[in-house]
Image (cartoon, rainbow, N blue to C red; front, top):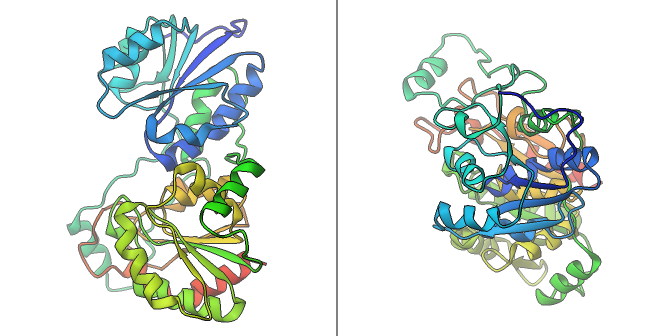
Length: 373
């Protein structure tokens, strides 16, 4: 399908955003390049309600249109049709995302070639040569790898441009935008930060504030053991006299309570905010932190995009594909064990979890200390 001509200058652009927090942050380089290409366009982001606050004050986005969980596709498309968009950029690969903009009768619709939806697009972009699918290893493959008689590094070798940010940049390049990566970027205002500090009684904290995010939505294979988080938090607090702020969703409340009980005492302050913050408040408090110790999950990407260094134990997933910030950013410390089965991309480890237990408390502590300098 033909791509829009280089002489085409749309004034009203719809970007169909992605559905998950970490993925949304990784789209920001492409959105910034889209804004650079069309500086006078009114760019509207169609986003799930849960992510609306992420885009406040973002320089690439003029406006957001939110859709509710379970909202029917015809309801969404009817609202879009009234906006008279000239161009739609479809970031998700789902048939639904392409159908939304087709039903909205947006005349130019750009997205990746994928089954069951190409006819809905006016410009179907071929997959990148450098793209690397996150194929899950089978338990049999994993057992074969770890049973090899000699130590071997079977970690997948990825192209330098395999990272997910390049997927979205390649789409905007189809509109003649610059495909070169820039760092993911989010924005919080001074007013946001003051408000969050006041709400959670952090305005009187004078010393170092470190963040700790022990959960991960995808599954237990992405979570460094809680006892290791506790041991690392104690040692770091001993060395720095820092204040710990615990982050997470409602499902992480029990995990955070366990860490709070083990680390908080009269001499060391711990603010357990798991399940208590809005997305905007989470952003403001992550910006406050000197460093964030976290699993590979959405707040990791948010922190990095706000300029906060992150330390991340990686096990079942790959920093080459979905690591925080701009790939290779030296501010971030991405730690891995030499497990031949990693990355497996599984939710649960079928063997002994060596990819995570092989990352020692000592390594994590030293990485946090370096990142905090």
